[in-house]
Each structure stands twice: as C-alpha cells, then as structure tokens.
Amino acid sequence: MNPAIEVIGVTKKFKRRTSLLRYIFKKEKKEKIALDNVNLTIKEGELFGLLGPNGAGKTTLVRCIATLLIPDKGEIRILGKDISKNPNFARRNIGLLTSGERTLYWKLSAIDNLRFFAALYGLSGKERDKRIDFLLELLELKDFADERVEKYSSGMKQKLSLARALLHDPKILLLDEPTLGLDPAFARFIRNFIKEELIKKQRKTILLTTHYMDEADELCEEIAFIHNGKIIDVKTPEEFKKSIPHKDVLEIRFLGFIEKEDFQKISGVENFTLFSENGIWTAKFICKDTEVILNDILSILNSKKCKILSVVNLEPTLEDVFIYHTGKSLKEDTTEKL
Ligand SMILES: Nc1ncnc2c1ncn2[C@@H]1O[C@H](COP(=O)(O)OP(=O)(O)OP(=O)(O)O)[C@@H](O)[C@H]1O
Ligand SMILES: [Mg+2]
Image 1 (tube, protein in one colour):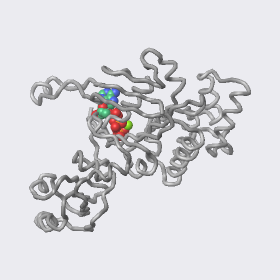
Image 2 (tube, protein in one colour; image 1 turned 90 degrees about the vertical axis):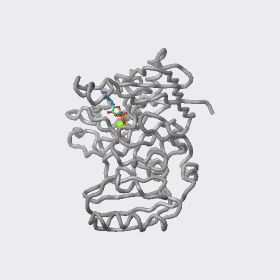
Image 3 (cartoon, rainbow, N blue to C red; image 1 turned 30 degrees about the horizontal axis):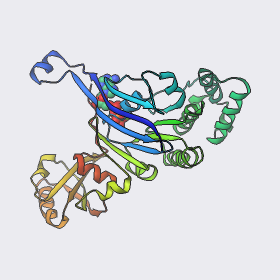
Image 4 (tube, protein in one colour; image 1 turned 90 degrees about the horizontal axis):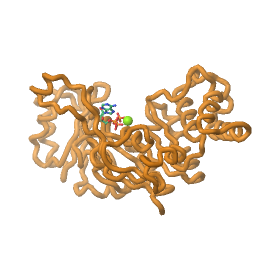
C-alpha cells in the first residue's frame, strides 16, 4: 500500500517567553522543542493513532501536516508530494478536525456554516447543496440544520466540525482529539462513525491523536507513542501490549499526601506513575512480581498516614506500556507552562 502521509525528520521549536533572570539563574533554555526529529509513515486507508500525554507534541505535528505550521527541519509528504512545495495539493487532500479551538461560527446556523466553508473549497450550487445534505444526514444533524450553532451541545458541535472537515471529500483526515470532553454517547457515536463510515465504507486515511488509551486500542491499526516531542515506538496495540517483558501491574488508590520520591526507593519496581483525580491518588507499579513490592508500598503509605481505598492486580494495558517506557501516565500533564 502506498504511503499517504510521510513525516521525515521533522523538528519544530517554539520560542519560550522566559525572563532574563530565569534564563540566567535557572538556566532555562529559550526554546522548547515541541517535535524532535519525528519520523512516521501512514499508509493509505490506515487508521493510525498518535498517543501521548498533554504537551507531548500531538497537535504540533497535526498542525505541521495540515500546513498551518512550518517545521524548522525535515519534510512532510502527502500522497507522495512535498507539502512545502505543494501546499494547495495538501490542503485539497486533507480534512482537519481540531478540538478546543473555535472552528465554527456560533451565531450562524449549521447549514450556513457549511455553506460558508463549502464556498472556501470552491463548492457551489447543486453540488454544494447535495454534499451538505449528505453530510447532515450522515451525522444525524438534519433536524437541527437551521438551528444556530450556539444552541448546539458540545457533541453536536463536534459532529458539525466533522461535517465541515469532510466537505471537500478529502482522502486524508487529521482528527486531533476528536472525542475530547464529549459525553459517552457522543464519544461512542464519533468512534463508530470513524470506524464504520470513514474507514470501512469511505476508505479514508486517518491520523487520530488521543490521550485516551481505550480509544486508541479500540480504533487504531497502528499506534505511535509520542512523549516530549519524540516518537518512542510504533506498533500495533497488540504488539505494544506484548512488548512489556514483566507482566505484573499493581494499582493502588488512596487518600492522603505522598511524593513521587517516597516510592522511588522500592526495589523490584520497573517503573511507576502517580497522579491524582478528584482528590484520589492512584499509584501504578509495573514490576516482575507484585508480592515482592506490596509490603514495602503498604508500609510507606502507612507511615505517611494515607488511607488505602483499593489494591488491585491488573492485566497490562496500553497505558501501562506507556508508563513502562516513559514513567509517565497518559493522564499526566507534560505541557510547558508558558
Ligand atoms: N504556539 C506555541 N508557542 C509556544 N509553545 C508551544 C506552542 N504550541 C505548543 N507549544 C508547546 O509545545 C509542546 C507541545 O504542545 P502540543 O500542543 O503539540 O501538545 P499536545 O500533545 O497536543 O498536548 P494536548 O494533549 O494538551 O493537546 C508543549 O510543551 C506546548 O507548551
Ligand atoms: Mg493537542
């Protein structure tokens, strides 16, 4: 199968707004490397996942491929053509869905939004109306076509953004966190739509970014782990899960306060992560044998007067593979605070 997207040695740096004092005393570098010599090949018709925590570089890569950012180094090819020399060809063949950015006009109705964006792609008349009608039907938005977008729920807005990305029937779709912040029913609709309609029926090539491991596991044929702007590895979800040599994963949830350093002394731990959600701490340990480390962990938690809520042994998931490689959870935020 031919490559649809080729990313060759792409590096992208951003200037940091550091103060002179921080620069001198904290030796803070003036640049942040958001993408560090990234190499990826995505084949035609493939659903490829880019999985990484907040701040890993996912959106930066998507924006480079979509010609919205220019890399400092490297080359990107779309359907064999260098996008720096053929930006219009790339834009014609790419549909982009971003989340968290306003890509629709909220004061306009859904149908007027689509008419406006269709005009930007040179669509008009009957051809345009047919395409819009088809997309509204497909995304189950027809009954709400004349409503102003400001009245839409976030799930409906995301469906409409997907219709917008599909207007010019591009061969390639870049879906940046397509289900971020959506309620479960809409997230399920979008995932099904991607799998059944876009991949199976329409045979699009899709690059999907996410930090939901279940989403990547369910949808993607191949996954690249990205962390601190570097691609750590590219494999199928199954290959990733088999790649952890030590299979035991111990998850402990507790209340109280503990520092990462407290766990660092325990021998027998291959890697671990610690994060809190809604005031509850979760520590996950990857090790050869949980029985060997359990006593040490419990005595540390007891000495810090933490209240243990649950202790469970788990089958390794994609998340655990990520922790094994990076010592970070996909739920941790590695974004550079600007
Ligand atoms: N315009 C910018 N100026 C300066 N730094 C930036 C800019 N855009 C991104 N960065 C930095 O580059 C790094 C990668 O950011 P990016 O948005 O690509 O991550 P991400 O993987 O998409 O994260 P998230 O999951 O939060 O969307 C972060 O440290 C971020 O702070
Ligand atoms: Mg992002």
